Each structure stands twice: as C-alpha cells, then as structure tokens.
Length: 497
Image (cartoon, rainbow, N blue to C red):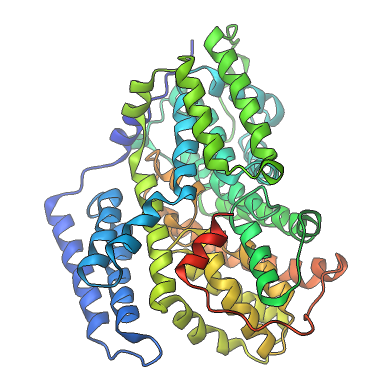
C-alpha cells in the first residue's frame, strides 16, 4: 500500500493561519521601514526611481520573511506597487511574471504534481533506500551529493522536484505532515534543494545562470568559454559546495532520528500500472530532449509544456486533480523575483549597490576580492532569481575587477556558483519549490541559508585559489572590450538562453 501525496493537503496543513494582530503588526512595520528608506536623502548616483525601488524592496522583503500575508499575495503586490509608484511601466512590471524561465519552473512543479498521482515516488524512495540504507546520516549524504551530481546534467529544479516527491511517501508513512514538521523533515527539505542548486552551476545544463555567465563574459571580454571548458572549471567546486551544503544543513538541523524504521526499506512494491509505465517513457523522452537543447535550439520550457500536453492527451493522470493540488505560491514568488530583477537593472539600483560594496575589496588579494564578489552575489540574488542576479552581476564585477588589477575570469566564474548562496527562498527555483510543500518557514530557512553562505563562500574561495589555477583557468584578458550598458532587454536576452 502506498501513501497518497496531496500537495493541496500538504500546503493546507503546512501554512499556519496568521492572527490578524500579527499580520497587522508586520504590515505596519514593513510599510514604515519602506517609508523610512524613502525619506532618506537620495544618493546622486541612484536617482529617484532607484531610491523608490529600494524603499519598496525593503517593505516586500519584510512581508516575505514575516509571512504576515501569503507570499504569493505579496508577490502580486510587487507588480502593483512598481506601477503605482511609477518605478516601472505596467508592461515592464508584469511581463517578467510570464518569462519563459518562470513558465519552465511552472512545468517542472507540475511534473512533480503529476508524479505524486503515481507510485513512482515510492519506487524512487525504495531505490534510494537500497543505496543509502536506513542510516539517516548516510542517506542524507547520499541524497545531497547525488542531487548535486544529477542536477549538473539535467536542471536543479527538475532534480529537486523528483527527489522531494520521492521523500514524501517516507514522511507520510512516518506520520510527519507539515504541521508536525521536525528536524528530520526540515533537514531533508533544505538539503535536497540546496544540494541541487550547487549542481546547477556545474554545467550549462544545470541552470540558466551557467550559460548566462559564460555569454556575458564573452560579450564583455571577447573570451568565449565552451561547454567542456566551463565544466572543467566549475564541476569540482560544485561538488565541494555540495559537501559544504550537507555539512551546513547537518549542523543547523541535525535529524534527531538516527535510523529509519525497518519497514520502510522492506516494502514490496506492486507491479507498475499501464499509466505509470507510459508516464515513465514520456518522462525519459522528455529528459533526452532536454539534454539535446543545445542541438535542437528548442527552449526547455517548450519541451516541458509538450510533456504535459502529451500526458493529458493520453490521460496518464487526472488534470483536474493536478490543478487542485498545484502549489501556486512558489510560481508567483518566482515571477515577482524576475520582475524585481528587471527593475533593479532598469532603475540602476543593482549597479548602485554593487558599486557601494565592491570598492571595499580594491587592492586586496584576488581570493579576498572573490569572497567579496561572492557575498555581493548572495545579497543581490536574495531579491531576485539567481539567473537574473548573474545577468546583473557579471557586467558589474568583471570591469571592476579589471580596474582593480584582479584576475577577471575567476571573478566572473565565481558568480554563477556564488548565486546559489541565497539568503531568502526567492533566490532560486529549488528553494521555492521546497517551500511550497509547507514543511518550513522563511525564518527557519534564513538560519540555514545564512550559515551555508558563510561556509560555502569559504569553500568557494579555497577552490578558486587552488582548483582554478590547477585547471588552467586564465586570469586577466588582454584588450578587454568596453562593456556595454546592460538594459532590461539585454538581461532578458541573456537569461533566456
């Protein structure tokens, strides 16, 4: 007998109703904080629109972290506020909500919902237990490093949703629902998406930020990095970041359960039904098509949409049930993140923040500069999608590193890895997907994300100092091009590759 997975039930149980008093208090605090920022003198280099954007951003971040109102509702308010306060035009504010990367994440989450209607997650968990065993520490390590490795060859969001759905039968059989979430569930709900995010920076296949960084470096310097060269530089650091992630999550949320119940590993699965076999074949073909996107030039979102259409045509799963169980909060937040990314570029707020922080590290050894660039990446990507943060940061840090006499290629290559160090869940699809299950709050996530960022940046700096030279990465680029101004349209072009 298998445990039925209902995302609708999970979200309903996992999101505790906030009292009106609590919500009102944080709404007032958020608005007051935004007004306080707005009343400060406007820096000359920032401008009125950028100042208004930062004031709004402070209010939005406080509302997101306090969860005074549902984060999906706050996300809708982001677009409304930017239009009302004339930060963006209505077109510029709303179009990013339908960005094709956002649509791709929608399809990825729907894929997970569809898997939840089958016994495939239970079967995956059975295979995982055969490899990892019932020892929780060994299982945790196996899943984290496995997620990091697999995400490099598919997509960090895809691996996140597959592995999380594989874990759901275990949680439910152990009687652990979101309202009863404990250190055991929180450990795995953090470790899987964060491990996957590490793998997303290892190859061009892992995430949009990887090809975006290489594309931007080529546009700015004329130095073009291909698939294999990029993987040579980034794969080893990604694995070490996966290891650092496992250690960070284990320290902050060590599972009190040391051994899994024996019955979890000995359950005999019934034969697969016809619709489950068909879904498996369709999914396999989908993965092959995703792998071939460099050759076919078909965007991953189109392939993801085709997967859903084919499944519905052959009635593999119940479409009405999929819509009822779909967790809408994460996709709204991700859309708002993209809208914030465009606004950061259009208003100049992102570049202003970068120019305030980066000069602190001028004339320092380049690993120290890299650590500074990594922290800048962590801060910026906490308020937007990490692909958007990469598109914003590379054109900023590369010319600054060149002016400071710091090797530009290592700095540029640190950005797609450092943008996994999100401090808020909106920073990347894997953490948003995990949040949608309702097993942890944003404050609980912040504690893990902050400590992981400290540990990860230390590991990344060491990898850059030791591995990059060993791998033969060049430092400065002769005759570096003058970087063109990156507009929101240029940003869209790059992150959508």
